[in-house]
Amino acid sequence: HVQFCERLWGKFLWATLRVCAFQYKDDAQRFYRVLPKRLERYELRVEPSKTKIIRFSRYHPSRKGDKVFIFLGFEFHWFKDREGISRVKGRTAPIKQRSAISRMKTWLKASRHLPKKQFFETLKQKLTGHYNYYYVRGNSRAVWSFYSQVIELAKRWLNHRSQRSSYPWEKLKRGLEHQKIPRPKMTEKRRLHQCALGKTDADANTTEEPDAGKPHVRDCMGGVEQSTFLP
Image (tube, rainbow, N blue to C red):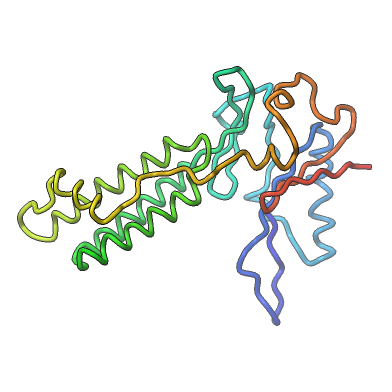
């Protein structure tokens, strides 16, 4: 996690987020020590509270402790699929899930008195935005959980528009269908990371690490992975 050192003539509102993967622990530790010194040359600094080294290996899969990491709203961990192939799985980070539901609850409570058409149109936009970002392969459970909780909250606050319960479940379901409120739909159409690297399932299941014997760092930034070999 890199922050820009600001000067009087400009501000950078966003920090640069970067994930670097190493084959060997010694290389990771050396990179971790040297990186802050090199960044200082360009008036950049590493945020210590958001920068760390973790062991993220398909040979030691786990969802506990430091075997997972959070990046751009997703929590990543290794798992084995039904065919026994080791894969990286990303799900909505729990803290992001709770935050998104909390924001929806606040909006539903404040907007329950809006005209029906405006209320459901805005709800549709908010749900679609969430699906577009979070509904990738392996994250269906978290997205459907978000959808279910939002619909339950919508029912609760719509029924607070008056002293009587004006939106029982059957009426709400008809309203959702009439207003074309979308259900979760996957937006990721293919495994972009494998396509970019030209990998197949057979490659992912090899017992030998790629580029074995060649110290390297893999840098994931902006959805593109680049490999840089260390001297």
